[in-house]
Length: 191
Ligand SMILES: [Zn+2]
Image 1 (tube, protein in one colour):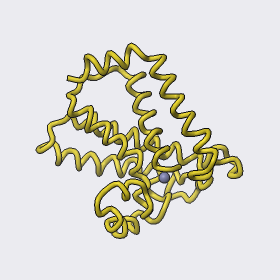
Image 2: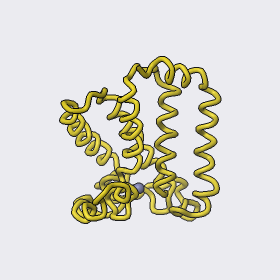
Image 3: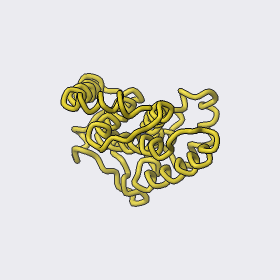
Image 4: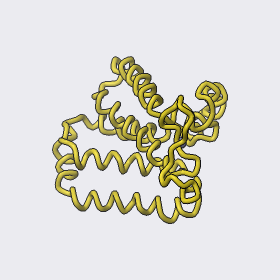
């Protein structure tokens, strides 16, 4: 999947969470930081490849990627697994803990937003031709559907003409169905 599709998938997962989970009060700063964390989380697993969308979006990312990518073992490796979810969850949690002294936002909300984006990335990649090594270090790549032939090619026609519009439709549908709850959240829960 392309960075754009991952952004939208992360956002879709976040919308779904707001629409279906009990609402929580948060500051505007928290909401903004959480939204950004969700987008970063949606791209984070691809920091294992120098062409990852996140590297292109940060200054000096190209250079930094050369030092960091080798540690992650190549593309679609540890960062694309259940173990990776725990590892990134732990590291990001520690990072947020340290940042909490300078950044006054509700860190648990930010952490969850990041993780929702992160997991959405792995789910989306599972539909890709290459599959995802969910059970790393067990070297099996899992894909949906199981037959590789039917899976998607990154940036391919099917992704652009079907997956991306389908995600957009899913958002529109959720806003339509949970309209009053989402409005309630935006109006009364963000202080
Ligand atoms: Zn990926």
